Amino acid sequence: MRYFIPAISIALFALTACSGPDIYEADDILHGTGDIEVEVHSFIELDLEVDDVIGRNKLERVSAQFMLTNDEDTPMRLRITWSWRDADGMQLRAAAGPKAEQEIVLRADESRTFTFTSPSALAVKFTAEINQNSALR
Image (cartoon, rainbow, N blue to C red; front, top):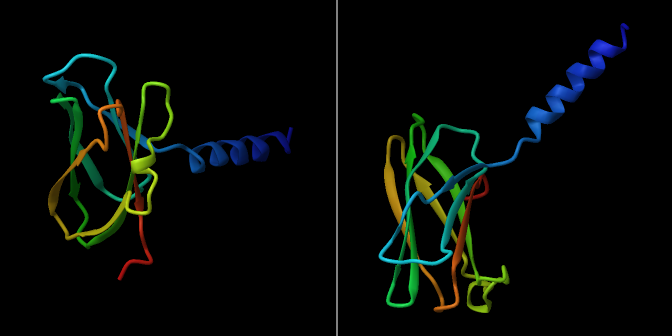
């Protein structure tokens, strides 16, 4: 029995330490119909808010938008990466290039809105990932 309790403690720590990202989905897709998906995955353990996740399907192009707010007392260095996929889940070639990332610094209490436009009319799924970037100076 004395080995059982430490084993449970280790297992619970491993589960919480390896938890996945916080996922934010668009509640509404404006001006359009179809299977449009917009998701933002935040891997940030600091006090970062992700709000106003929306998508728009207009003129055969999808736009995705979200707002980040730094609720910390110090700046945050972040890396945002994104991808666009077609209805079959295949990543679109135009989004696979080296420019599908952005490094930013959000000052304390700063909010900033980010908007992305699909590379082609085939794009129906947008996914952004937000990670902390300690290498950015």
